[in-house]
Length: 75
Image (tube, rainbow, N blue to C red):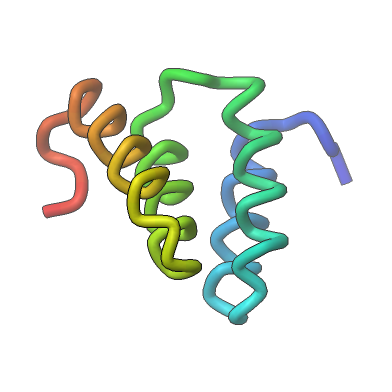
C-alpha cells in the first residue's frame, strides 16, 4: 500500500466509516487532510465522521470549510 497517497487514504477512511469504525475513519482522514488540506471531499467526509460521533462543533467546522471550497458539496 502507498500510505501517503491522499486518494488511497480518502477511500480507506470512507471504508472505515461505512464499516462503523468511525474513530479509525477520522484517524485516516486526518492523515489525508495533512496531504491535501483544501480538498473539499476530504473535509466533508471528516465532518460527517465527526458528526457520527456526536462531535457537532467539529463536524460543522469541517463541513463549512468544505462548502467554502465547493459550495455544491453535500447536496
